[in-house]
Image 1 (cartoon, rainbow, N blue to C red):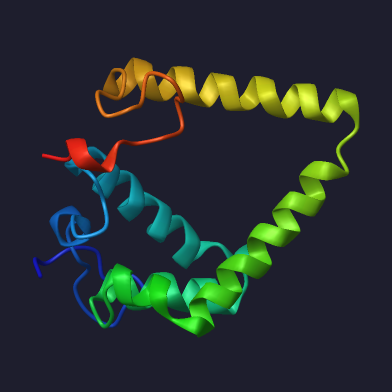
Image 2 (tube, rainbow, N blue to C red):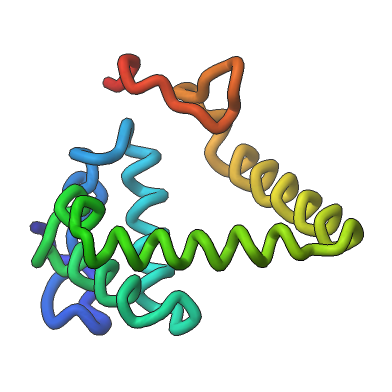
Length: 133
C-alpha cells in the first residue's frame, strides 16, 4: 500500500492499483477509487456504506471482500432500492432533466478521458470481461 490521503482513514490510503483485482482496467480502478472516496465522505449514503468505503480505502479489507460481505451487500442493496424508488417517482420533466445531466456527465468524462476502449459496442454499459488486459 502506497502512502496516499489520510483524511479519516487512520493511515495511508490504497492506490488505484490495489483495486485492479475487481476492476477491468486502470481507468476503471481509478473511477472506483474516486467513487469510494465519494462514499466515504458523503453522509447521505448512510453509515454502513461510509464505513465500507473507509475500510477499503484504508486497506483493512479488500474491495472483493467488501462486496462479498453480507453486511455491506445488504447496505448496497438497500441504497440501490432507495435510488430505484426515487427514480421511479420522477415526473417526466424531472426524468428528462436527469437524463440530460447524465448525458452531460458522460460527455464531459469522454472529453476528459476519451471513449472507453473496453465498452461493448452493442451495449455501452457492458464491459466484456474476457478482453481485460
